[in-house]
Image 1 (tube, rainbow, N blue to C red):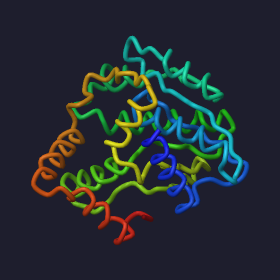
Image 2 (image 1 turned 90 degrees about the vertical axis):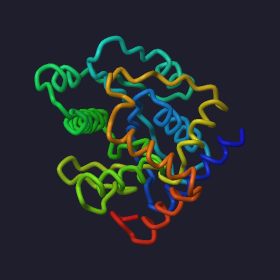
Image 3 (image 1 turned 135 degrees about the vertical axis):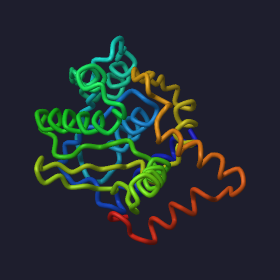
Length: 237
């Protein structure tokens, strides 16, 4: 498996470069069912067999309360990998789209999802939460912040949440989205479609499309931006 080995190597390098995992860690993996989170779950599960530091995994999916959301493929994958699986029932979808009727709901939804995931992780005895943000996500977040907020900012590979006493880690930070897509095909994973009706119609999707257009003229545009982020040391990079 070409992409399996490549992504596993990238994940291991990210973990070592940013000291993401220590002996005895109990890590909650946020699993939405999309391609990114399934890839992260498989990579961390496979890493357990040879990584020098011993750690445990818990997979957590948030049910957003947005109607029919079939977690069967996720549950089967977790069973195959030997990872305990928890579905956390929430009313986030109803709060965002019905009670609040937010015009731009993504920010509120993200905040509520983070809180629900962190609380579930703590309840399961985890000291770290692994998120499936990849290299393209980091670049897109930087441009979103620059264009819409007027600041040079993106997420950090490792974040300490003082109030929750949790670490957030992002082991896919060196992995490109196109590599994840190839891995999903290679491994035969079955991503679960997002139940959110705004999926693919957000500002992030606009930035993703913009980068795609820029890459047609300047092939290395994303590599150049990512390199600039690392050289600047922004947000602990």
